Image (cartoon, rainbow, N blue to C red):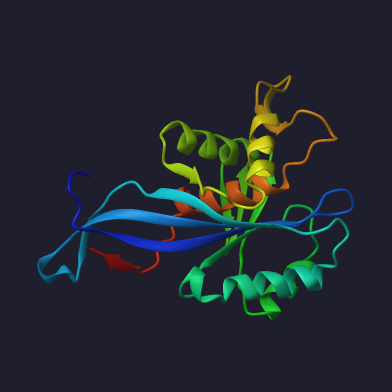
Length: 214
């Protein structure tokens, strides 16, 4: 979009819940979208392609109890810096209902992403079943187009960059693309938390009202 009238800004949180052998990770990403407004700037008539900046990362120690993760996530979600009720997108793959319920009981009402090895996205309420390849290609596309940045001096930025470098594409016997880290010793928790949030922001088809900055 050439010469936008202003920008909408909002934040999206991505959470990858660890299990026995991997830690939990939370990312906060700022989404800045160019807009063209109607008369008086009261109505958004056209939106451009959003740009994203990873502004905060938290990675819990291995074995941190889920209630602690819920409490910490709620504190970030409710912080003034993240805006008014930002969307929380959570990787719920392999988790039981009691774990997910902890987040609902805290009032976070997360969007649940479940990774699949299929070729299509399906939806059941706030749960999306998404091919893991879709999440990985979403991050790759945003990086290549220059629409995804990592804030300078960000704690754990190096961890995220390393996870991006180690992610690999593997083609199964059936011809399906699978995205995973190169070895079992390498982690992908920060990357998957970010990928879940970015996929939802780009393709989740959920728009929230935002403040227009001129």
